[in-house]
Length: 414
Image 1: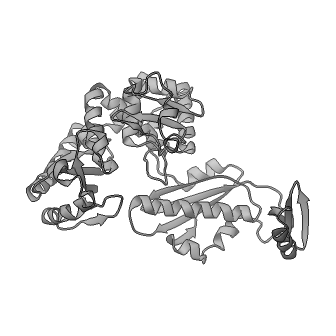
Image 2 (image 1 turned 135 degrees about the vertical axis):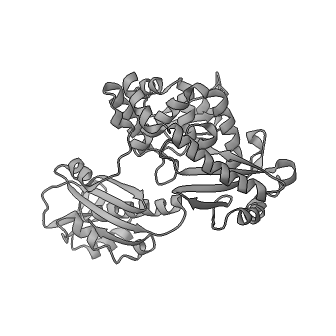
Image 3 (image 1 turned 90 degrees about the horizontal axis):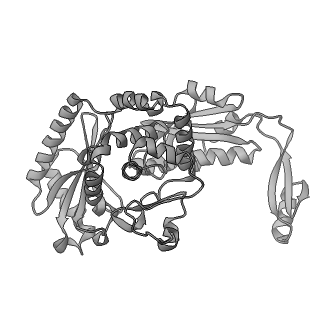
């Protein structure tokens, strides 16, 4: 495994030239911002500050810390106060709406974000989750100095498995979660060894806040409903892994199991989802691929709309009697959505699930609508003539649907 990890690191870690170019660009932007901001402190944030960024990283975070004592009751004004300074520093930028607005601009293939925060010394002072970010960076820098390359490996590993990012359309592993996991297990290899044995629920408390107590009893149940619970090392009442979904968790455990059995450099290389790859993956199942032009907007929100479109495709296929065995999306500029439909013998009729017999008014209406029905357990089942005999036809007929027009600009079957 050690040889594979060394080879993989050489691929994902920035070279000295990468580092010099990146630092030069970041420092220039940081200097401009510092000159335009008064009464607040400008700092570098994210993986750039922690030293855990990957060679292909294109995101750069700048935090502008407003003094806590002066602005603790003016949290909702910070973006308005900062906008004037951003306008002085950068000719072109956009304001992104969120729980607290921030600013974004692009240059030389990189996305720069300027984020207003309160300067806090402990997590309990935070008025917004972004206020805690510098505390996260400090913790990682203090405890993770000898694990920076191992953290890079985990980030690349998760990227390659398409489970990197806490955005709601990914529900995966955030950069901070990757950092905490590697530090907690003292290395990538030890994490993999532990993760392949994980069950349906895993609870970790790196800072030992709740030593001798049941973490699941101490934290709010809404924060522990997910499969992985990591007590935030700088915030004892927060689950740092709350965004991770069951699918991403399962794929991570499976990936760790596979890697432990057969380590490969390819496990760290993110490959663009291609039609050829999907065709191989589909095997004998029917593959329906859709090229989508998304609406413009914040990446997380646009991604959520794409996910809703994918779920709508799945429901529509199920409505017409098809079994969806897999689905997914790749979102890089344009989006590629896909569903895999089980190939099976199609009869002339399809079953339609009806209401419980006990709900007599609904049952009567259902029988009126469907000429042929039967009772299945305590439910009514209706039958109607099959309209579609392949999944692609179902998706093609959705092009004019009003629901989809609100979510994407257009879509075309590949």
